[in-house]
Amino acid sequence: MTGIGDGVELGAQAARSRALAVLRIRSRALAVALLPAAAAVILLAGGSTGHLVGGGWDAARWVVSVLALLVLSAAAAIALVVARSRPAVTPTVAVAEESAPDLYRMVRDLADRLDVPAPSAIALTPDCDSWLEDRNHPAHGPPPAEDHDDVAGPGRPAHRRSAAAPVLVIGSPFLWWMRVGELRAVLAPVVAGTGPSAHPDIAAARRFIRGLDAAVAATSAVGRGPSARAVGAGLGWVSRLLLRSCRVHAAEMERGVAVAAAERAQAVDYGLRIVAQEQVGLAYAGWDRLLTRVALPAWRMGRWPSRLDVGVVAALTELSRRDRLAEGFASRLGERPACDLLEEPGVMDESVSLLAARLFHGGPAETGPDWAPVGWDEYAEEVVDRTWRTDAARLHRVLDTLGVRRAAEDAAPGTDGPTLSRVLDHLATTPPDDPAPARASATEAETDTAPAPVPETETGPAPDTAPTPDDPAAPHAPALPTTPSPDDDDDLAGTTARGAALAAGLSAQLAREEARAQVPGAPTPPPPSGTAGGPTAPDTALWDDRALPLLPLQPPRTGREILTAHITAMVCCAAMDTAGAAPGLDWLDGPSLLVNGVRTTDLGPHVRSLVETGDPGPLRAWLAELGVRPEKPVRLV
Image (cartoon, rainbow, N blue to C red; front, top):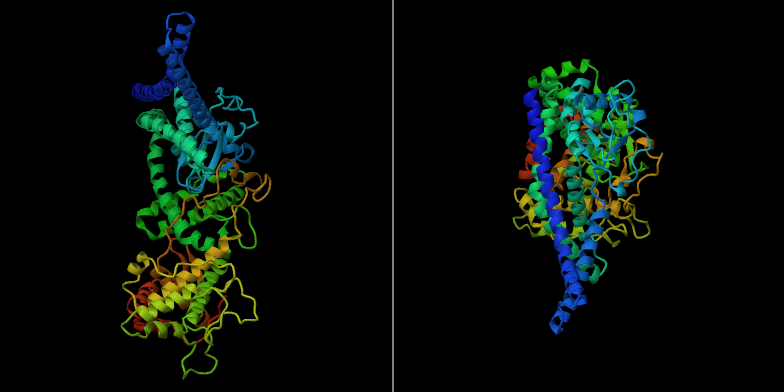
């Protein structure tokens, strides 16, 4: 215990010394701002006493006095911007004490064992991390009305909480995947950080650095006129200069705080923390896989899974079933999960899931016809089936635009609907070596945005028919670039000319649909208190949602990826309509095709062979093996 105490003291001393260094930089900046004023006072006092007289001294008094006024005005403006700028706050879902009394009790008991102040509140974030966050800036609103001076609860030693107590932010996947003991072990070093944070010097240094950071962001957003931009540039330059001067000291201060917190937390559940850290890495892998493979397709369809945290448990359980390295993790599921510390875990999971959709995809803050929650039992029909049929319909619309016949001349009657054979025959036919016609067709598909006479094979609206929202001739469709970007050219270099033209047409059609969806959707105001999630709605009043998504999951898809996804969707639609296959959900891989209740895993290579080489042989053999009839029309959305 002596070694632990020495480590805590050394870390705290290092943090305090670095905090004093930051405060000294602030003091030096103040001294520099007051220096011209001090010189002006000396010159004015010398003139009034008759010691500094003469024309030269009079001119110096005027010059220095004017300079002092300018410097003091600039310093006051900088101080005002630093003091009033709104520091960045992580988007979270606030957890009220009445909705999680057991969780608050556990955190307070943990703070009591660590002999540190308890956090002022608890919040959840859709991320696999936990930290302390200071939200005591006036722009963040008043502190909670509840009186928690006796933070340890009745019958326990009291910790008098100061007004600067930070908020404990917990990653929501931890609550659902970890057991209660594991969560306490993981939170121990985080809660221990409230001790150094309560020191006045460290708190003042952090406020100063956060104010400078917020001032830089505020001044960079100024752009109403030349004078405002000039003033903002000057204030921003000074703020950035001070921030650079504090950078090293601030980093070392935070390192010292972390060392002190880690040393103090060694006395609490140290052995269990080693095991819990393994669960942190596993939860991160499962959460990332769930968001990118399962949640993202639903968000693109206007549906948001309302039980993401339950889904991550299912995904990690499936991983433990498949991977022998994770076999031991499933045996933990018999213990009490940390989500039992919440009174209504389902309501909290729904709020966190909606916040995740906003952060990672930019979805609206409220539910509606085009943005509705979906349960896991409805995912296959509401998301997988609709996604495949929507992509297949888009694929055939683009083929219509390119003038591709719906059926061969010798085709049987009743086969002129949307068929998989149409796609295979088009991509398997080798055009002339000159790729210019294909590129011209792609250009026409991108720029055809106005009603005009069309060939018989095109599916655009007739002149006397109003355009539908899905029609590329809709009046609100923005103009798109007619020349593919160099990145798309590089990505499609290994495909056939017709494949490249089809990929370009699909990319243009997708861009138009996304642009139309974003035109009426201006930034959505935060929901009023008590609606769209009630008391557990995300605390959007604390953060700026004008730049959503804040954390996009994936870069935009390339033309090759878009073409591959649409052909795969068409194959799955044909399998469902002609061979009795069904849409399914795989917790680790997302949407999947089920044939006789078994997930197919070998479709991808056959589709890529068609896209890259124009050879439909492997795919046709795969279809024949499963009994899929590509010449039969499929049902589209």
